[in-house]
Length: 82
Image (cartoon, rainbow, N blue to C red):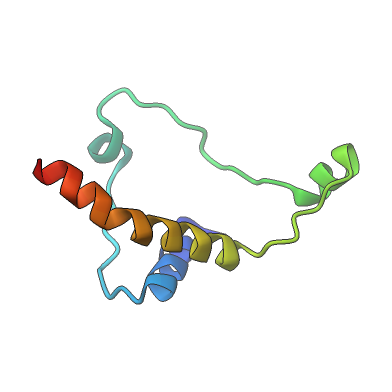
């Protein structure tokens, strides 16, 4: 899944119509930041090595995180106002 696909999934789950802004690494992380060029996680290798296969879909995980953060948001906003 690409970052753009993940952003679209998050938009779908949250019902957001916010645009996705593309930034360069330098804009996002500052000059000199280095990161690997490409990540290709392999679930099959995980299963083979530790006999585990994820059973929760990415969309379900995103929904759980969004639900958790929405519950926490008012508390966070109140703490910032103090």
